[in-house]
Image (tube, rainbow, N blue to C red; front, side, top):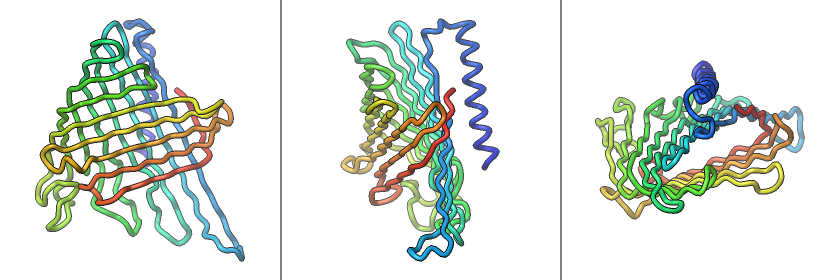
Amino acid sequence: MKKIILLIALTVQIHSIYSQEKTQDSIPSSAWTKGGTFSFLLNQSSFDNWVAGGVSNISGAIGINYDFNYSKASWSWDNKIIAAFGITKIKEQDIQKSDDRLEWNSVLGKKAKGYWNYSLFLNFKTQFTDDLNSETKGPTRLLSPGYLQVGPGMLWRKSDNLKVNIAPATSKLIVVDKELTLPDAAYFGVEEGKSTRYELGASIGAYYKFTLMENITMENILNLYSDYLGDPQNVDLDYTINIVMGINKYFSTNLAFQAIYDDNAFEGLQTRQVIGLGINYSF
């Protein structure tokens, strides 16, 4: 797993260097805007004969948030890659995951009128591993489940930091390892014995990043989806807030909150919150 994470980080770094060289040689520098951050979060608590109580624990997480966007004449192409993996170790318990994501969002736009563009979007997301050695270990792994959405629509794009994409005819494919599905039950909506599930519906994707105050930025990522072929009233929701409070060039306090509703995965609201001292490297 460590090798996988390091490989992804190295790949993104090499891509960044290569893209910069290619941009200078063959593409006007104003056409591409590229940049991202590599972050490391650490939390630790230690107790020894502490009368008030407490359990020693340590947790850490690494993440990559990388954007590479193209804009020239009437064309735009926005891309965001998010990769994150975190673990938590509580005394006398197995190691558990605190974060595990791999996601790519891509939107191709052709100018229509004003801030509106004709668009074609793609969203892919999965996780790196199963639940390690924790008691909650389940039948998940890389690409199982994997989610792929693609569809035409309209993009309202004011800037790289403020945009909304509406796609009323979105194809969604859910992929799982059929050998890992649970007996006599659907797995992330995929029927027992099958490895894929196809859906057709409508999706909305919104992105807004702004400065709350000096040295504090807030990033909002919202994705909504309704399946015409299933239960269109059950709207899938995935909303993420990332707040970065800068201390200096390399250190910050990072807060991440994510809420997911997907009744094919879990009949209820899933939430995740991570906060800690971050070591950030921009590239």
